[in-house]
Length: 79
Ligand code: SF4
Image: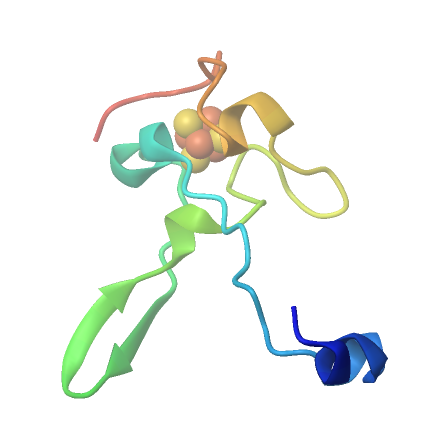
């Protein structure tokens, strides 16, 4: 990193990317959140990636193992 970049405050640093959770098993589970967005004319189903679903409702959240695909959800039910 250049000396000049080191001196700028953290919040002004260029973004290095973010870790987004993509819980794979939630994509076709009947309990998934069904939120979708339209982006550039294309419909994207984003609800399955949320940390809540019909089983884990706010303030409860999906287990971290489900969110990072290291654990099988005991409530998973294929649509
Ligand atoms: S019940 Fe389990 S597999 Fe289904 S959406 Fe919720 S966390 Fe995902």
